[in-house]
Amino acid sequence: MTFTTQTPETLSSQKTRLLARQNTITNTAGYSGANLQANLLILPEKYSRDFHNLCLRNPVACPLLGISSIPGNPHKISPTPCIRNSDFDIRTDCPAYRVYKHGKCIAANKRDLLGLWSANDVEGQQSSENYTAFLLGCSYSFEAALCNAIPPLTPRHQVTNTLVPMYRTSLPLSPAGIFTNATCTVSMRPYHESEVERVRDITRPYLATHGEPIAWGWDAVKRLGIRDIHDPDFGDKVEFGDGEVPVFWACGVTPQMAVEAAGEKIDGLVFAHEPGHMLVTDWVVEDLERLKGGIAAFRAKI
Amino acid sequence: MTFTTQTPETLSSQKTRLLARQNTITNTAGYSGANLQANLLILPEKYSRDFHNLCLRNPVACPLLGISSIPGNPHKISPTPCIRNSDFDIRTDCPAYRVYKHGKCIAANKRDLLGLWSANDVEGQQSSENYTAFLLGCSYSFEAALCNAIPPLTPRHQVTNTLVPMYRTSLPLSPAGIFTNATCTVSMRPYHESEVERVRDITRPYLATHGEPIAWGWDAVKRLGIRDIHDPDFGDKVEFGDGEVPVFWACGVTPQMAVEAAGEKIDGLVFAHEPGHMLVTDWVVEDLERLKGGIAAFRAKI
View (cartoon, each protein chain N blue to C red):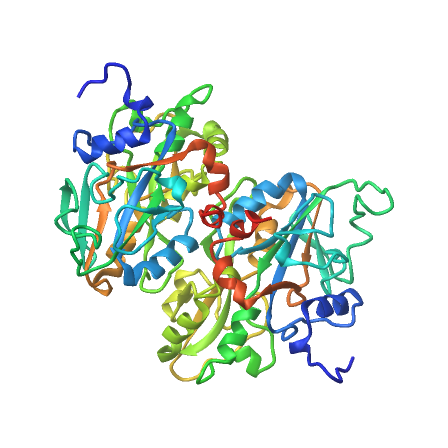
């Protein structure tokens, strides 16, 4: 696919979603630069209250950008400014999906969820499960802000063109219902010690997409219970320069880890996006200030 | 003080605040049973954004019930349903206050803050500092629900008529601006292992006042980094019966500990309520469901 008049960066959110629907794109990094991208978690409606509480209790790791309005309906997201187009379908508008059963990933890189989730409103079919979808903030947004800083604070993995390194930690999430024993997953970007305060300041306003770092410095590695900083649990390893320290942010893989921890307690399928293959929302960076108090402020207006 | 027609439990929130203003009551436990009580933290306006972010990032330990609307003005709280009476004064309407300087408590059990905070609107005086007040949820509300459960789950310290035991933990708060290296403080109530799920279910809806427990069981003592379960850092020791385990909730002392951790980074005075001597708000238990998404939902309507 070539872009004669537009770069991926300047595509509208709807155009990027259409490309994802047609499965002509994979990694959404850099697409629709003005818009917030979302992690996705879809689970049977009977667990939606517990998962919603998990998000409300752990907003740094699980910042809510939107929730499907009607259980079983894959077309409508609340609050409405999150996704405005009426042809939206959460089963197709991510480039790729994962499927979980009893806390284990049983399928990856699926093009869509049409065969697994027959929506109630499609040709009168009745799905055996009513699914609820949760859209959660993703750190792609603040990475652009770091790149655009003067002088720039470009994340290392963007320089090396690799995946951001991610680690499991021993940092417990506040439990909610069936979601117990879950721990926070973190992403890591190396910075010189002298840059840490500037990095904190730049990412602080992005509370709806993980916000400022949760820990930094070499002593944080042990404090977070990270097994081996040079061997990430997800993504790719990066090198540290002289005087650089690891800086850790809460990571959008956390909800999938919470589903893994819940394990057999979840009866039925759970769906998620394929890491890096995000759902592009209609939220723009200018919405961040109001979103940082949660989506409830927007819900009240609907 | 005797109550001929009304018990403390049935007093209106405004009547309890008037008693506090007149310094005729101390511990507010059991007063105005239908209303939510609040922990109080007041700090110079220049730190209010950081403290607000700390609350938004750590809503289980620091659940926001209200914020003063205008820096320096002790009379108005936003959202307005939190405190409706126009004669309200946050400098007098708690039964007792504490004063912090550079992270250390320098005065306790003060009757009011009138001598320390000259409000901008009082007789044209200009205070040297503009203070912002934060009201944070308190667990008194869910204790009533535990007592009223069938069969009852009355907290042990209510049976022994002592203060709830509280402990410092090693559980880090998500940092926000100057508020780094803060850890969560927890309150503890012993329950039989077989009662834990019922205790979780009953306290879960009270998300605006700490919600369900953050940890339980004997192995949680070590996991939370508690020094000695039989020697609480605040409050009084309680005994465990056969088969009972400690159940831990995030505790409203946490914000004061965050101020201690910030230490010299805070220039100027910080005020808080005296533990147990809470501010009674106009919020009622019926507001909890909407409050659990944060006060932003209410703010949008003001």
